[in-house]
Image (cartoon, rainbow, N blue to C red; front, side, top):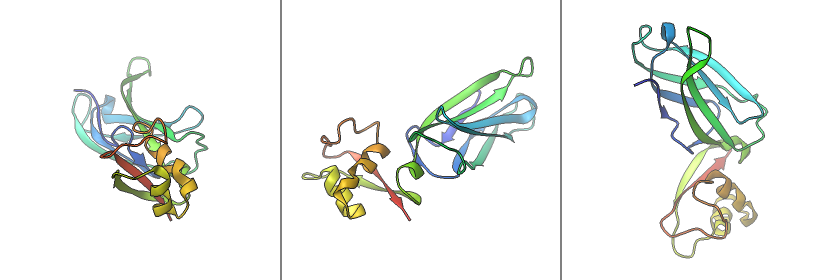
Length: 163
């Protein structure tokens, strides 16, 4: 086992800070984290375990609020820097969705299980008071919604909520 990210899970809707947790090991007990989307990034490091070869639990609050992200989709990475050449090794990457890009004042999300007769417009009207905001829900669930006109009974959608 090298490094494992247990939180966030793939396509989780995250805020700021991004909470990163898991199990890992690194050279001299040091691992690095990176949150990016191809245009901007935030990075940092933390200690885990007792030293090289020893695994330990980690939990990091990755503050990313001043990043100039242009996309909803971010990547959370945890990796070790090689003692031999400084390259990134044992890298784990998890794609996530960044809530503050979708809803102003993002504070979290509600779970909505699609029922017969639901549409994204109806869910948006009930949540935001404006049916035209349906794209917020589609953007928060890209792995489930490829066509905003097609949602299915039983789908479990994350509906982002702002302050």
